[in-house]
Length: 85
Length: 255
Image (cartoon, rainbow over all chains, first blue to last red; front, side, top):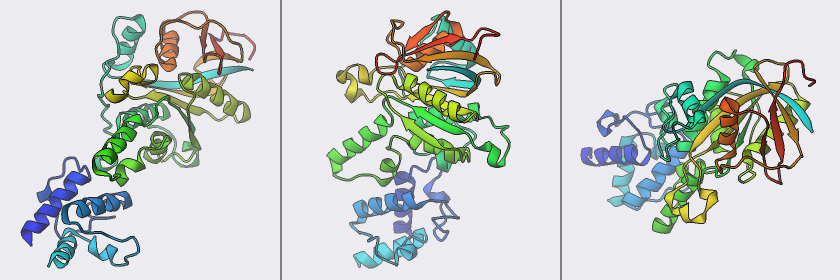
């Protein structure tokens, strides 16, 4: 799981142009949006596109669980794992 | 239409030009603007805000910040009407989207969000917490003249100052063969304009009279700024579509 979390951190830094932020700076359990990293709704869309490209996982705008999946790096890693299991 | 305008504050930025002294050298013809994609640093903005900005956005945010002034009063008085006049708009962002679309078939949501024509002036409103109205206008090569006429009209209706920003970024290389639309040095010039008599340098704008324009072929905003810094007599801009004549107001002349 650690490896997957680190991979997702790299995707976040690269796809969201987080200048000056290293993957290791991101806390796996910290909130991605609002507080924590401070990402916004456009970032959520961009991250969704990047996750689809990397893991072939689609996120539906109708899915009420999206907030849960995107809560933190760990939550995203758990979702990716569950989809590829 | 005849209008008397006061330049209450101004700011400019272009690659290779440093400060007021640099612009004076440029106006005198001893240095030129670099045709580069260099961008200004924006130390007054947080990194998260700056990360996806293109050259046009960054130039607009810098000159807008300098002209609106960090010492502005807070609250409702901080509201200033703003108008962006640009010939090419977010051409660089649109090129990136088109290139990615051709390559991958997908559009980046973040790139799309900053590709619309009024993105730079909207970003300025957000960055400066400016609740005044904002708009963007395009009149081809005469965008500056059209923007100046719009501001004169806005001031005729309401005496509160209007911030005019004329800016264009370096066009992507792929557009070079399209001719004059893709040429012109990157630059941003802003003028905080008030009605004549409200202080600062004063100009008289006569709109609607066509006449011979100064040769040179540089973007109108730069032709205007060169004239403002070092020129004499009358300046004509706007072609046949937006013809304007500008002169410096003489002390005691009627407004």
